[in-house]
Length: 211
Image (cartoon, rainbow, N blue to C red; front, side):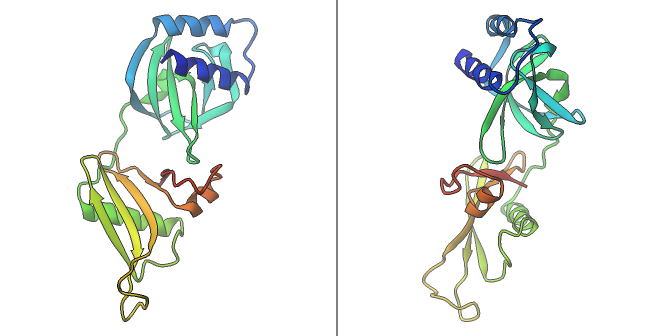
């Protein structure tokens, strides 16, 4: 965990410069030694209005003015110290951003929308596909679902038959989604989606968050 915090300090210090009146590195050292750690991380949601800025250390003078998250963003908390939480936030492009934010701006009440059936998971994916126009139509497509304890893995494939055409022995995959049963959160490995959100490598098949 100390390595994680140190890495975040190096990253954020390149983005913003803290007020010289406070030794942010010393504050960080104290947090590293005295903070309350959550080894598995605790998922929290931003509840404050406006921008929630990152800090290189848990002190108001160590703010990085160009790095922030907004209301309803989800992040994992790994350390608490001095009224701040050290979090890791994953962007839609699949990048991790780490740093300290004000703890009272976060809540563990995620107000999740659990997915309780395969049918509900398919409906959620259908809505997402059409909302973001990842396919022009869902006609002549089929949903192939694999389920484990935590997620539904859903492939959308072409349906080939007399009406739709194509070789009936094949079913080309068009899109893949993962749906979290507990929270209702979704991600997709769609290359088109990766390109839209500015992923560095859209071809790496990373499952990137989507609503």
